[in-house]
Image (cartoon, rainbow, N blue to C red; front, side, top):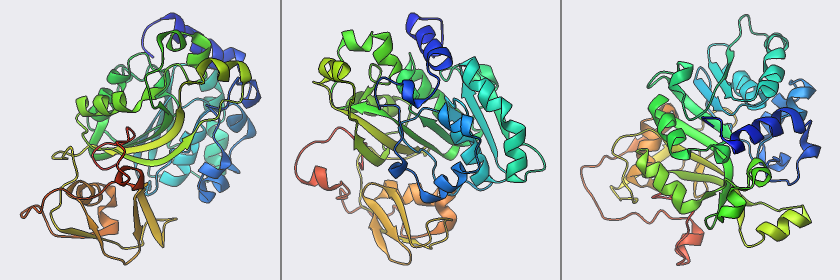
Length: 353
């Protein structure tokens, strides 16, 4: 969050001084349920120092597969939980940068750096923490086309200029790079009085993104098609806050998007077929690209042109065999998830989700 606005300073103080652990949160919007986490990730969590876990806040588990050797950026890294998980999955030849604006959170993350590297058995650190605002990554020296994967866990909703955040993300991503993040979304725009409430903003409710506004921001950032990996309704477990925001439907969603040229704003049929080779670590039998693309190893699956690009022109290319190209067009591709096929226009998706 760039600048010194009242809400920004409140968020800094809230996460830096007021909160001492998950039990201090007023709602569960910023709490990640264990059921959202991959079992392999839960195993890595056992290798992390307890302080990293107890003082970390998030609404999902935005750790994508196939991270070996990748250069990864975590926006709003907090105490570094997701940074260290990604460090373990990326291996010693990978590299992870964590960015946060809160001194107290970064102090915890930095203090555990050496012990965690030793625990992972690394001869040199593959992690770096930077203090700064996620709207201005250039100021932190993060160059154009330099990052394989951008992650974030329930932080973009806190940003004062979300459009700037998404533009920065797609600036720093390499061609074929991936944005994979969890955050709080809504089915309607948050009323001004709630959006301007510093406490509700800090609890990840006031700045929650309306689905359609998010779609428009992604389009402006150059990404006409993103995918929803998971979606869960947020329960507000505080009666006073629930009464105040009860007209708003909040969702914790994990979203993935790729920096790819030539993505189309609807799914188009070119007769392409994808076969998953079963080679992604932890996904030997099945790989789920999103909430309606579940690839079974060895089984041919018809895919739209956008999906073919996401598999063929990214780090997943090694793991898939794509048959066909865009030389022949067969019209629109029926690629929507079940809730769209029922005839209701759902705000949660880009072209294909």
